Image 1 (cartoon, rainbow, N blue to C red):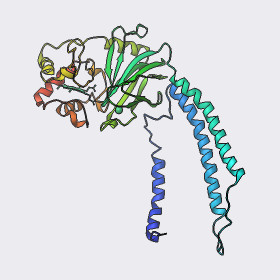
Image 2 (image 1 turned 135 degrees about the horizontal axis):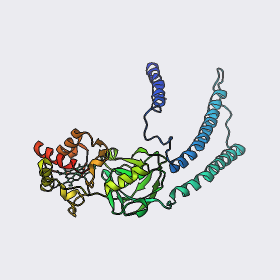
Image 3 (image 1 turned 30 degrees about the horizontal axis):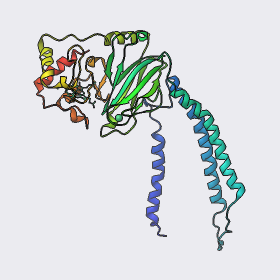
Image 4 (image 1 turned 90 degrees about the horizontal axis):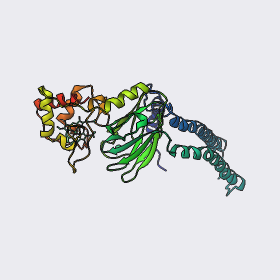
Length: 351
Ligand code: HEC
Ligand SMILES: [Cu+2]
C-alpha cells in the first residue's frame, strides 16, 4: 500500500475540524424561511411529528453502531509484540440473527407510525379552497375556479404568489406544462412532484396569516434554482379584500405614457403571450404560456419570485433583457429606453 508523505497527511488532517465546523455552522442560519423543522400548519406539523422521533431513533442506531465499531477498533487493535494473525472466524449465528431481527423490528415500528401519515397526507381535504397549480419553465401559475364558499365568482388566474386564507385547508391540483417539477412550501407541507400529463392532488394549510416561501424541488432545467414561490396566507378580512380586488378588471389607460405603453404592449408582441383580462384576452395558440399580468402590481415578486416588483430597476432590467434569468421563455426584441418607460407606465396600472 502506498502511503501519503507524513506532511501531506497532517495537512489533510487539519482540514477535518474546518469541515466539521462549517457543517455545524451551516445549521445555524438565523433567518431560514424554508425551515421544515418549524412547521406552520397542520400538514407540515404531521411530518415534523414523525421526523422528530424517527431522527432520534436514527441517532440512537448511529451511536450504537459507531460505538461498537470504535469498541472493536480499540479493543482488538494490534499491540506491540502481536506477530501472528488473529484467530480467523467464520459466521456467528447469534450475532447475525440479532442484527437482522433488531433492525426489522425498528423499521417495523417506524413504519407503523409512518404509513398512516402517508395516507393522511394524500387524503383530499373536504370543504377546502381549490386551486389548480401549473408548474412550467420557470414559474408557477395558479387558477382559482369560481367557488362561492370562498367568495370567488369569476375565475382568478395569477402567478408565483399563491394566496390562501389562513386556517383553512387548501386542495391543490398540480399539473405541469413541460417537464417534472416539484411543488414545495416547506413550512406548510412536504414536496409533491408535478408531472406533465398527470394531475396530482396535494394540500396546504397555514395556521396563521403570513408569507411562506417555497421553491421548485425537482431539477427542471437551467433556471430550476430560479423557480421560487410564495404562499401568502390572509386573515378573513385580508382574504375577502384580495378576492374582491382580483375580481376587478383593470381600466384601459387613455392618456399619457401609460396609454402609449398600452399600445406598445400589442405592437411589441407582449399580448401574444401575456393575458390581461378585459384588455388583451387572447394569446397566440403557439406561444409559451406566460404569467397573467392582469393584477401584476398586486404581487411582490415576479419571474419565479426572484425579483422584487417594488423595485422599478428590476422590472426595467427584465424588459431590457429577460434572458437575465437563464433559460427564460420570454423572448422579445430589443426595446429602447423610451419604450421601456412607456411599457413600465402601462404595467404599473395593472394593480
Ligand atoms: C414569447 C412569449 C412572451 C413574450 C412575447 C413576452 N413575454 Fe413576458 N413573460 C413570458 C414568460 C414565459 C414569462 C415568465 C418567465 C419566467 O418567470 O421564467 C414572462 C414574464 C414577464 C413578466 C413577469 C411576470 C410575473 O408575474 O412573473 C413581465 C412583467 C413581463 N413578462 C412583461 C412582458 C412585456 C412588457 C412584454 C412585451 C415587451 C413581454 N413580457 C413579452 C413570455 C413572454
Ligand atoms: Cu421546476
